[in-house]
Length: 179
Length: 176
Image (cartoon, rainbow over all chains, first blue to last red; front, side):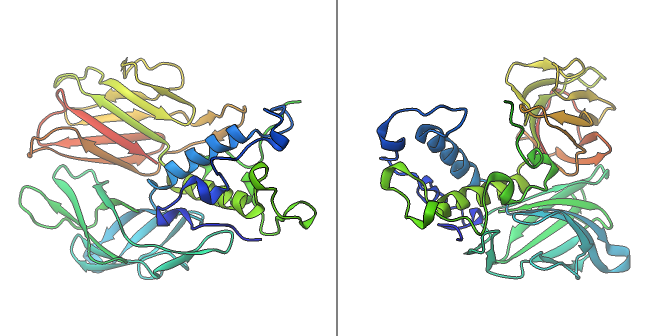
């Protein structure tokens, strides 16, 4: 058996997809069962609500990018993604489902998600569309400023520049969060 | 009987949905449909388990807000800190944290450091090592000449601000 509803990256999770209804009640309406060997409807409702509320806000993907600008090649990527274990890769050689990260010019990189739909651990395919992007500098350069924008539902561009001179900074690190 | 959960605390980032009781082969008891308002469907519970496992992959380990104290090496004041094993909204001296909370110090004119323990124990008594990997800082200010960055090395997160010294500036950092 698979799972109801959609994966959390759709951001539509509600308690209904976890089987909760207003009428959900304990077995035969006998009241709270013994918590040591059973689970009450009230407890399950609380658990389901907490999961639904946090699911809507979580990033789909977090990446640490280290530029290789002097070589004019893609950044090195270390990433976590929902439903997958941590991976490290060269941006242009992503593991299955992870985004390609390409070099645009010094300090500027394009992140391209490989699909518009991803399959969760229960085998349910759910669409993903870029809704938020958070980027920050992870480099000990005192003038580094990270910026980024969503270019399309599957593409984001991030950049690292010197905020005093507006020139791009080479070979430094960014943290990118995508949801 | 004390039952220790399977899997690892979420910050190991390794839990799959089976840790939370999900299973592709999960089915209704004796093949009978879920019993109306008094039962849960196997597929409903699978959804909960899948979502919870997914959340655990990308949720921050720590969200912390602190205010630096002058341009000297005085310790910042932490006004909010949430980690999996605790939460404080009572301000504390970053150099003298309550048990379990991270140490926050001002290491140089422009730098503050957040130091974590190498392992944390969850409420079930399960210890799990922790090393900060990524951090995302935000200055809680509207002064445009300030910019901030953060990087991790070992158990320490360094937060650097420019162009003003870290004087009386409030920063929120999400640490992964």
